[in-house]
Length: 570
Image (cartoon, rainbow, N blue to C red; front, top):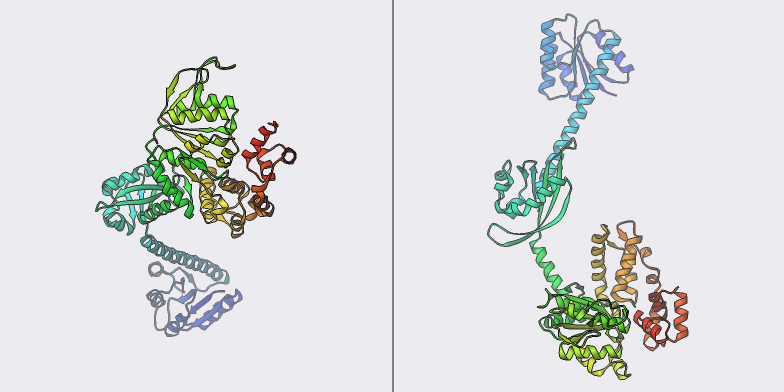
């Protein structure tokens, strides 16, 4: 309970007060006069009762001493002769109340409870104020010490407060900025912020990672990332905007250097073989040389074609893609070269072919190994003469097209078997870019994983921050027969199943966690012979899914399509 000091020169009064108050559970100290009271004040009482008329000194003097010492406790004066003058003086000196003798028990306990309640509330208020002051000082220290420039604006665009980082970033002192219009005070810098401020004021929502380029006060280029947040008052009202400006000039330079080392166009990888390919692409981009891209399915052959097109002089012209294995011979011929009305049943109007559509640009012929001998011959003419002839037409048309072809087959073996024209092979293979399978560039797997995580976070509006070590280990140890495409699908599969912020091994496809059977397929794929019975069995097991049947057989999807045509099962 509370400590109470009773100061009175009448012993009966002191003893009566102590009896009443101790029954309430309080600790009571008694003082006969002024000198005794001075020593007991060191006990820091929670409440003081003092007789206004003591033998040597007035109770008013005790009240003054309490206030001079800075003691925070209610003081109740006790008097036998109350007067308006005495009451006024007591209240002026800070007395809480006064009691008239003789004091009855109920009045004493009522005043005691009220005074102690006041003391408790004042103590809580002082504690909160001290905590608030400490927090304010702490926040101010943090505010001034953070390396990011922080600028708060009101609804009229006046600067409310800035921190010291504005000096380093903009060369502007906080004292010069506060209270001024931000457009005038920030000069040309405000142009970088204008859109962000308008967006935040209009929608009253956070805007994150807004990247800007500007020049500092000495004219050097700088890169910064801006965040804008609504400024909300204690009642939840919208009163302005807080801008946080993070200087990432050095980081942007490092990112650029890292991208140059680890990527080219939309491709990701730092593997030595990939860096050699990037170097070759830089040389090829400036020419119109025909390029043959080879490699397993899913290794990124289309990305190579895009890099060749968009990094060269034909970038502003069309890039036309054709999947040669997806169409029958007649349809493919029409798609590539076009046809005239009436050339065949269903040709009700003239059709422009893909070569014509790609005029001035690039045509990418994917799965070139699957084209028929007749299409091979017509394609050879295009490469030799730079002209095409539409189906059903006798006139020729000149075309200016760069040809980039791709295949996952061994065209040299097909030439040896008589399945592919040797002259066309060498026309296509002026320069060959052979993409390594993912299992031969495992050092790129972490980079690719992080790339796909960032990509799917943006695409699906998720906030997954990475993978557990177990999940990463599973991805590193898997043989990846489907290469980068399969890796991308595996990460997407994990995104769908993951409900938290970290992908775990259980979120990955089942075959990733049990790669032994897949590895056995890869090791024997070169010697594997797919006969009609094996293909039929695989399709039945896969429920007709050709991609799944290819995985069961340990061959590429294109091989399944080719075998289906060979066995007339398509």
